[in-house]
Length: 438
Image 1 (cartoon, rainbow, N blue to C red):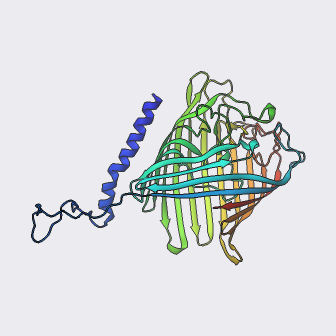
Image 2 (image 1 turned 180 degrees about the vertical axis):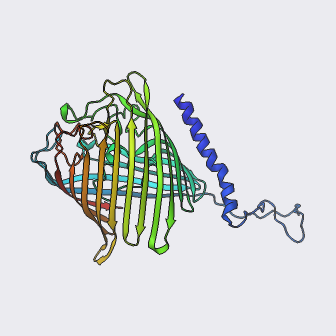
């Protein structure tokens, strides 16, 4: 049944884009198509196109060519955190305590085209304690026009402000409940023209790290995960529940108001609905989320605002007040019903100082509220700036938060970050991320 549903959805999305294209060309007011048959050459001596005995001359057609661009990044962190005590856990390098100069990630990717065929992929190498090797994204598609395309593979889920609802290296807490910069495996169709950004997608399942064995939390984006943290053990991560995402549908509609040289205002709504599958019993239940979002650029000022609500109903479990979500090999519990408030303000300052071309100060705020009485909110304030110098991008962040996965001791308080969040303590982290992008 799932396979039939996948095939039908893919055909409908592809057919819809393909048949819509001639209509778009007629309405665009462009030049009419060339109806000349290259196999028939008309001249004054042969106005009817009949063969004159001479060999017809056809225009040279070399066909499409393969165009490939390679890219990648190498990033390091200089991190200092005020936890009050060292982090714990079987894979934590306690020599660093709560600060040090560490390797962040190395990524390698490629994108390109062959005629109308397009593709984009990126693979990430993280420290072993963060899950090691996994795909960031990877899809192939077809570009029907500059406005229309379809993608098949692991693609960014069309939900909320894209590519990010935040400006900082830490992201907003929207990301840690699976609603920002999420990637899943399926098919996505896009229409982006005349101010409109319309996207629809069907995802058969979340992104998988390995065929038949990608069920744990070693991945880039946060999903409901059935297994634990791979090589992590003990009480430092949430215990697995055997529940995973399946058959998810997404829709996003946004419109941009163009303000000329000043910038733009973009408003939109997003929704998603899918299944949660209990891998042990085969039982299913539903999960859903929606969001309203605003994004604007006014000269140097940039603003992002988003409100989202999410409900997840895990089947076949004794306590359905939470699900287990995970990424970077560190799963944590997330309240089944929650709301997320997210905002970001930034200002672009042109700079001419050696290789430095721009400095962008920003302030990110986010808060997760839960429907269960007595469960504490997750709150994050992030003040920082991005320095751009050619291929070098440096994020400098001061993160003041309570219940943030990257600003929390890796101890017995970690699993309940987005449920009870019992300690409810403010913590401070200072991080410099040095990234070379090529």
